[in-house]
Amino acid sequence: MGRGLCWESHVSTFVEHPSAPRIPGELKVLIVSAFVIAIGFGIVAPILPQYAADFGVSALAVSAVVSAFGLFRLLFAPASGKLTQALGETPVYVIGLLIVAASMIATAFAPTFELLLVFRALGGIGSTFFTVSAMTFLARKAPPQIRGRVSGAYASAFLIGSVAGPLLGSGLLVFGQRVPFLVYGGALIFAAAFVFFMLRRSRLEDRQNGDQRQRATLAEAWQHTSYRAALVSAFANGWATFGVRNSIVPLFAASAFVGGGWVIDSGQLAGVALATFAVGNVAVVLTLAKRSDQWGRRPPIMIGLTVAAVATGLLGLSPEPWVLLGLSLIAGAGTGLIVPAQQAAIADVVGEGRNGGPVVSTFQMTQDLGGILGPLLAGFLVDHLSYAWAFGITGLIMLIGAAAWTTAPETLPSKNEDGQG
Image (cartoon, rainbow, N blue to C red):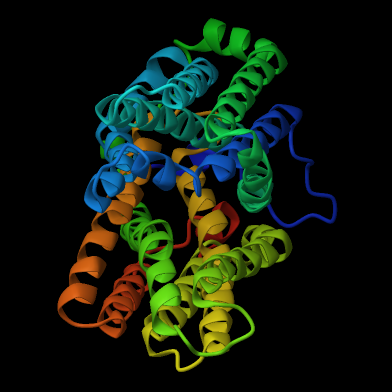
């Protein structure tokens, strides 16, 4: 095979056929599980900061509860990749779900703030276990012709669940602050049991064939410009979408238009801005994600990053709330192009039938790193300069992510092999 990945050796050549293969049943199991997980996460995400604040700690300490989750995801990503190769994807996936379930139930009964912090950190470990194993499983099992469609379906399940979750969480609060965490823990146990029993045959086959299964190594993937470009764009997307979007945008929306006399107050505007971003994201993922199987991976990633970069970069200059919402919608649409195509590109690098735990975990770790560093620098810029600077630098980071793909070859097998990439 040489130092680089040989596409022909592990990915069958294909052309676009009128009847592309259907999504395999075992992948549908993970898609359903993703929906359940996302609803649960959406239930607790808006509640957790106030729950932590009720321990009588500072705002910085409350932020630490959120950061601990992301930090431990980052730290344990390499271990999750190695475990996935050693044990197989489904055992690590189930173990990860059960770890997060235990952390949620423990969080509901945390007697002190210090233990709350520990429980959330443990949840980050479980989260990276099931995230990396799921991506590895999707990469190995998805037919090459429909990788974009599979990635889009998986992303859609998460997005729709994330939108529905906060609505359900608000309703559960009438039963007390502990109940949402217990519901999320129960949902994760259900998802773990669902995957364990529905993928039993796949798990047994993997156990029998584990020694014969090809493995995609990080050193092998690193030889490819496309994989290195995917790491740069993952960092940029993590910085903007998972970091700045969730931390700085609500602050800007809540503070920049106070007393503006708009139809909703500034506090509500923060939630509406995030919801508008999600609407743009879901709309594009549901309609265009599968097109990367025809267009290639590079065009959606580059166009999506550029669109999201411009819209995000201009957020801090929004003169009116409706401009903020419009730019949020556009940024969400751009991100909807990025994520499925980027995941499909990683699957192309790993190759069908190969276990690429370290390849996937490094990608995930890079995205998490962006999600951790982005809010820190953006917050610093807000404190010492302005929101315009914070969003402007974030847009620049995303443009750098797009630029990384300008010299990278197409990973879509048909285009890669016939020179169209």
